[in-house]
Length: 235
Image (tube, rainbow, N blue to C red; front, side, top):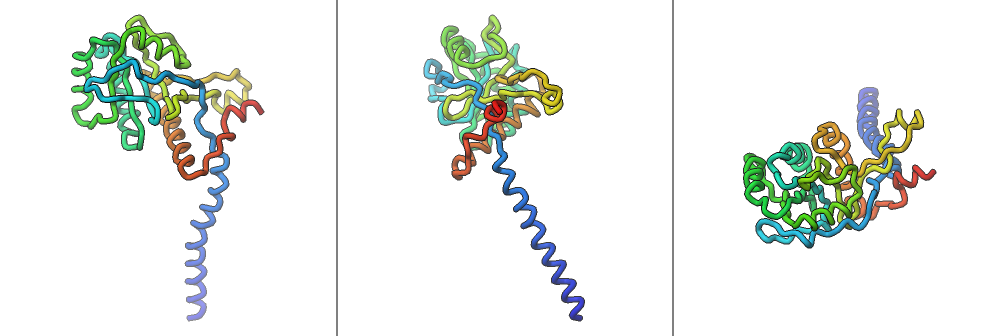
């Protein structure tokens, strides 16, 4: 009987201490956490733009994905649908997350049609459209670090991630481990191509998740701003 009790106690002890040991092993890992790089600062606030319902939309104090659909938004709806299905639907429940689409003045009717298609099954409370002049759109786009210029219709397939302090986020070093081992030249990632599903699903989704982790750690007082990928690159 004593033997059975001893065996039972040993088993219970192992079952109790294994999860604790696992958590202790994970604890140091958070010191290796690398936040998402700041690739550009001082992105312009969207004060020169209006929303459909005159609601004040701003980038500051939000984690924003911003895109440009141009003069014929319906022609560029693939960008919008990929954004909705692969980004918006995934992060819409996170505090202070928003998606902002920039379009020229006069495109309200096309946007209404696009919105109707997008909103068939989903609530789009955190999906906003802002309207501005061609000059204002170019000025806003000029404040971003871009991969490609705007097209003639003021659209682009690229979207950008902006943090609460109007910093543009991305990757200073977007090389794979194999490329690093082969000493390939550093390639940055400043924008995310919405037509490339692989980029949106694997890179952009991961980067936004990392950004939310950064802000969560800041709230808990656990964030160390000195541990950045940029610092590692300098070393």
